[in-house]
Image (cartoon, rainbow, N blue to C red; front, top):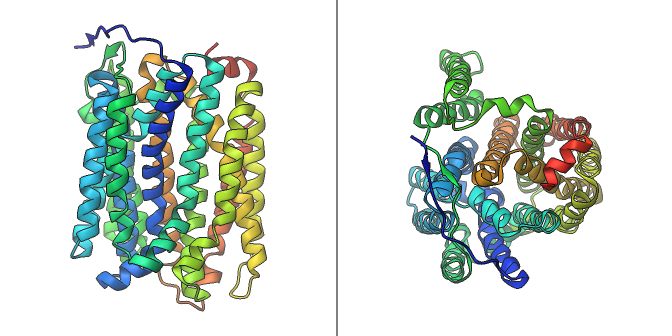
Length: 469
């Protein structure tokens, strides 16, 4: 049954306190985004330390993102039901404990398992942080600016992950990539206890366990076959079984969700071109970002002989573009709606991908840095309009679910990006790696084209809904 929860009357927060809450949420989101990409630059060092190859290293990244993507929506619903601060703080504790296990992992099996548990904790942070921000900011324009800041911090964390990872590797070794989380988690737990108010959705929804299980199977089957395909063969019995499992689970998920009174994911929402465009755009942006980051790591370290620090530093233009443009994008969304920033995002990502479709071992560093800057600018412009559009597509009381759907799309894009990039270069040696990676840059350009097409979907009435007016 659906229970009605009566919230205690919450005092209206001052502007200073509202932005303090935003800062606390941004701190946790920085961790989630950082952990999605900081490991990328450390993959070669982790592989040497644990004696494993590229395929196992892909699971080191995707064990985290697959679990995170699979549980985000349920975590958002749990937060709406039991309290957003409570679930948020639980997620911080789980994430921190799993980080310690990652840091001490004696084998790749332990590391992959601990990364999956990290994903469980992170699933309680991403949608809940956004829901807290949305419910703390009652004014639509202030909310748009706040989401712009939130998107900027999240984008910055994703983009600076390789730089941070390179610096940690140079000084402290690969285990420091996980130890660094512990003090940040402690700070976030203290700050959230002091500054973040408790809030809930006005109606508590039942957990959709069949939908949750089917969604997890869909994501795991799709990502798993992309990672394992180069090893087992794309037409092997195991691969064919994975295709069949993924197709059947997808069909069952749509059927089950369309018949439930309170589904995990209301498939009717996808009838809206605006909502569908936001979800598709989120997937495309994060496919492009993660293909870029993984190909950068492998190409620069394996084909060009860069150190981890130098390979990470090469992504600084991307971080700069994302950091500068994300708040600007939030302001544009608040004033003019999502069409303009989405168009700009698509154009820059398309241009960045096209710059590298002819990549070889002698490509100039200046061209690499220029392409990364273009992709970073596109990434910075993309997040705020996508987030605002998706959140505006659901009632405010279900802000946790709204944030979860968008975050799920992002993490699915991250997992697919890692799997696709890894599949392209899984069997390439240093001499062949640049040529093998070229389809990846075509894929990045294609993601930019998807955003350009998505930008045509919003209309004036969608802008009003996005802004909550």
